[in-house]
Length: 327
Ligand code: TXA
Ligand code: MG
Image 1: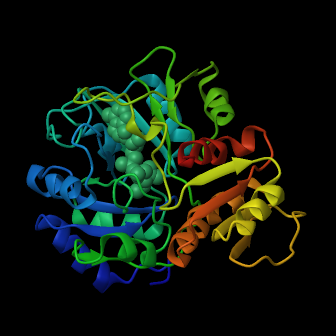
Image 2: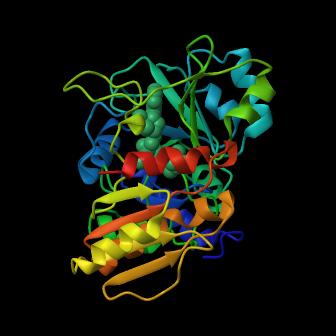
């Protein structure tokens, strides 16, 4: 459907499925989500099953507006009010004390819940029509690259989802910023399209940064999206400042290579090389990164080489995801 004109009949069908405890994949402004009624513990358990997601990794609850967010939390601090007013609807998830209505399976047994109001018209229409908060992780098998198109959802989860609302490619391309407001100072758990600087400006105070940490079995994780290797394509991936020498060395060993090149990188053809030239600006690069990796997975390359994009605040979320795709 047209992302700006949600088709009422399809939305109603999807909403009815959500209310009936089924799973619906839908576009947001970041990536596609795999949604279920957040108040239905069985439906939410199905999300974990379908994705192969460890039960200690909590889900984000998607709601229609700030008022609806307040209905699923135990307290709504001043910082939440300020950030919601400034960035919602949009790609910012706020972690606060969980309300009693939210089943434990959503929050992985934890006392906090992540909430966000998505900006995508289809996501908004679905949440409104369902009339319930929607718990939704990214619509990909656990530990794989998130889906930015309906085709990616199908490639990873075909036969395990009841309906996909297809509104074409998502505009943002990287998952929402996750900010923990239960700590003082607030802690940035996952960088995203809303930058650290934007949040610090809105709050008028600095954030604490979360360092990537190693998983421990059966311990509730602070934010598994911060694990060292999480958003991984099928082929081993390396990030290098000069892509060309690495790519040439691999093709000389007859290894099939996918290369995410930057503008200005050599464009010479080599046997066994799939070269994708990425945009030189952070926003379009973010929007295209996952689709590029899905296409390299589909091409069956054996190795992936990424020419590192520039440093700088604008690129923080891209660097964060690339760092966690490395083998
Ligand atoms: O853009 C997005 O956030 C997408 C769309 C669908 O909204 N969703 C998404 O969900 O990326 P998921 O499950 O793939 O990533 C959610 C991240 C995980 O790193 C999870 O650990 C963290 O948010 N998270 C969720 N609830 C949390 C909580 N209560 N405390 C700390 N981290 C939490
Ligand atoms: Mg995910």
